[in-house]
Amino acid sequence: MIRYKQIQKTIEEPDAVICDVCKREYAADALEIQEFHHVKFIGGYESVFGDGTQVECDICQHCLKKFIGEHCRKTDGAQSESGGFWPPGPTP
Ligand SMILES: [Zn+2]
Image (cartoon, rainbow, N blue to C red):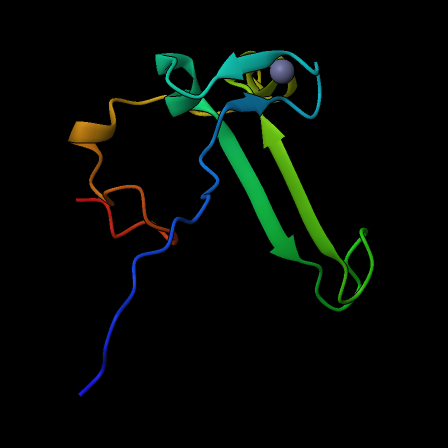
């Protein structure tokens, strides 16, 4: 038999999301944070970030648009043949 006791614990929950580029802070319950992009990867061999380097960055949609807005391909994701996976599937 295990007897349990009641205790109180403090937990952490997101309060805000801060863009690493513009430093703007968004409340955790703001719809805007659904459009944040979180980059997290480990650099591979010959990575410009360094082999084995952990890279993380949280970028708001406004800064991302400044970086890639003129270079990215924009389509309606619901009509995408590949469903957004890479590499894309064959095109008919
Ligand atoms: Zn930003």
